[in-house]
Image (tube, rainbow, N blue to C red):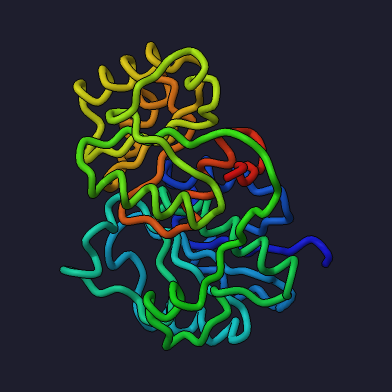
Length: 270
């Protein structure tokens, strides 16, 4: 398939979206929202509406955007100030909602599906619910043979089992750090370390330091409740390769782990 094209409109200059836009490796057109009606090119594969705060755009203008691109997925890329809008605001109907901290995994799946089939989960009818799209998703299982484990640091059994089920669905296997005996040999089998937490705190930073001393030179994936852009610098300084926001979709976690490892991970021998 030829390289896809993206139209980005809305508040795309906001700091929550700068890293996302800078990482696009395909043709991207940036158009202010009040000028988007001038766009007559219908060859775009994706329209992104960047929204940094609640109720930022008039409902009638959003409906006009949808009408102008009837066959193209329109995705709302949401900033931190949009969290909670689905409970206390007025989310725009007919638009898939993706927060800035969810973008990498969701977009990676869109690219993969578009390349393979020319149609994606984001092409679902605009009346589809989030549940409808999740049910329709399929996550590719790596059936190659390899070695290694995904380490999981979790305080409770339920947290570990949640990650273990997700990791197993990809064809990989996990080890619970807090319930395992580690030595140099077992540490060498850990490909990526997943750390489950609630928020970025001093205590969590110390926990990561401890894990790094126990199992050194391993990339970290951190699972947090609604991570904040203001914490990004501190998180990166602690050696974390990727952050996944909870609640997550399976593709979010798979992309983060694979990216942290620097390769597509392989299914270990049983």
